[in-house]
Image (cartoon, rainbow, N blue to C red; front, top):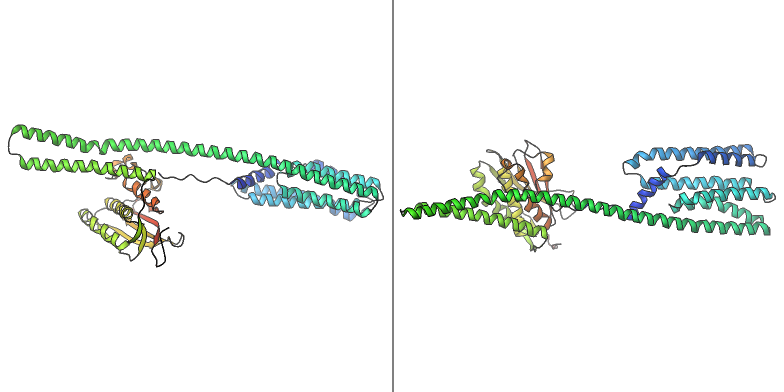
Length: 458
C-alpha cells in the first residue's frame, strides 16, 4: 500500500540516452571509403607539400579513427549498465572537432589560389565531407558544428585572402553552403527531437500502464487477503454471539436461576461485539488513511508523555508474557498529530511484545539518524528480541492482512503495521525495519520534526 510510482527519466535525459546509444551503435564509420579518400588527398599533396607533413597528416587521421573506435569499444559496457551517456556525447563532439581540424588542415596545406584545380579539389573534398556528415551528426548539434566550422572556415578564409573577384564569389558561395547546411542540420535535429519526444511519451505510457497493471494486481491480492481475513475474524465473534444467544434462550426455557451464567454469557457477547466493532473501526481507519480524508491536528507533542502512556498500557501485557518492557523516556517534543503518534508507537510496541519470547526484552527509545535531512533526524525506535523476519518477507510486513498467509505466525489481524505505516506517511515520516531470523527486529519511525524555540510545523 501507498507505493509511489517511480519517476521516469526527463525528456532531456531520455534524449541524451537515445543520442548516446545512436552514436555508439548506429553510426558505422566508413573506414574503407575514408581511407581511400585520404590516400587520394595525400597523393594530391605530393610535390606541393613536404612528405613529412603529408605523413603526419595521413597517419594522424588514421590514429584518430582508431582512437574513436577504441573509445566506443571502451564505452559500450558502461552503456549496457545505463551509465556514460554524457561521456559518449562529449567524446563524439571531441572526435568531430579533431576530424574537422584534420580536413581543415588539408585545405591549408593543399590550397593554391594560382591553381584552379587545387581550389576545385579542396572545395569538392570539403563539401563532400560536410554533406555526408550533416545527417548523422545533426542529431547532436554541438558535434555537427565542431565538425563543420573547422572544415569550411579555413577554406573560406583562404578564398578571401586570395582577393580576386572569382575567389571572393566562391567564398560567398561557400558561406551560403555553410549556412544552408546549418539550416538543414537544424531541421534534421528538430525531426530527431520530435521523434525522441514521441518515443519518450510512448515510453511513459508503457511505464504508466505497467504501473497501473501492477497496482491492479496488488489491489486484487489485497482484496483476496482482505476477504480471507474478514471471513475469519468477523465470523469467529459472530459464531460466538450466535452460540451465546442460543445458550440464553435455553436458560430462559429452563426457567431456572441462571443469573450468574447469564451475566457471564452477556459479558462474552459484549466482548465479541467489541471485537467486531474494533475490527470494523480499524478497517474504516485504514480506508480513510488510504483515501486521504483524515485531517491532521499538528501540535507540539512531548515524547515522554507518549512513552509513559505506552508503558502504562502494555506493562500488564508484557508482564503476562514474561517480557521486560524497557522505556528510555526522552526529553524531546515533536510536531505531530498526538492521536496518530500514539497509535503508531502502540502498534509497534504491541507487535514487538507479541513476537518476543518469555524472559527477553522489548526496548522503546529514540535515536538520531544523520542520513535524514537536518531537522528530521530524530527517530523513535522499538527493538525486540523475537524470532526475527526473513529479508524476503520484510517488504510484506506492512501489507494489510498479509499475516493471513501464515496465521500461526501472529495473533494480529494484519492491520496494525499497515495502519502504522499509513499513519507515518500521513505525518511525513517513514517506518524502517531491520531484522534477521533469530536475532529480533528493530522498527524505527523516522523523519520526526523536533520542536525548537523558533520552529513551526511544516
